[in-house]
Length: 204
View 1 (cartoon, rainbow, N blue to C red):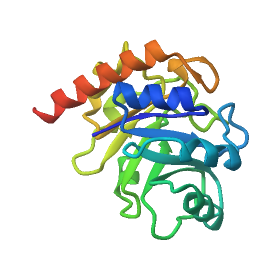
View 2: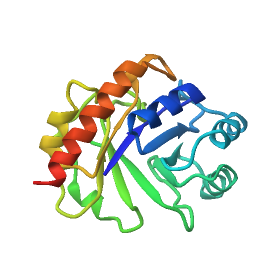
View 3: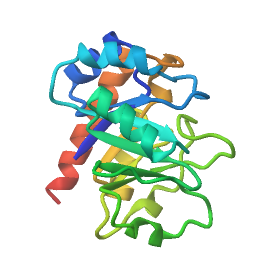
C-alpha cells in the first residue's frame, strides 16, 4: 500500500513526511506548477534524503527522453505521468495519472504499460494539486493498482479508502500552509489516518 505526499520542495517537509510514515514522496517537474522543483535543486534535495520511501517524479506532457534523463540523474524510483498524449519511457516504473470526469471509462485502467494508476479530479487546465475531489467509487477496480488523489486530507481519507478500496492515496494541496510548504501537523494527521484506513482495508 502507498501513502504518498506530493509537491515536496524542501528537506524539512520531506523528512517530516518520512518520519510520519509516508512511503512515497512526489517531486513536481512541471514548470507551470506552483510546486515546480528545478532539476538542480531536486538533485541537492534528493541526495540528502534517507533511503526507503519511493522517489516519484511528476511530469506533464514531457518527451520520453527527457523523463528518462531526469529520472536517471536523480535516481527516481517511479515516474508519474500526466498528459493528453504521453510518451512512455523505457525500462521505468510508471504510474499513469488520469483525471476522472463524469464520462470516466474504467477501461482506461487496463493499460499494461503502467504499474499503477493515479486518479485525480478533473478541473480544466490543472494537472494535479487542485484540492478538488471526485466520486471515489469510480476508482474501484478488481485488478488495477489504483492510487486516489485530489482533495484528500485527514478529514476524508478514511471515507475515500472505504469507497475506493485503493492500493494507495496521495495528498498535496490540502496539507499545505502555502504552495510547496507543508503544514507538518496536518500532514502527520493525514498519514496516520491513511495508514490506519489502508491497513484496515488490507485485512477485509
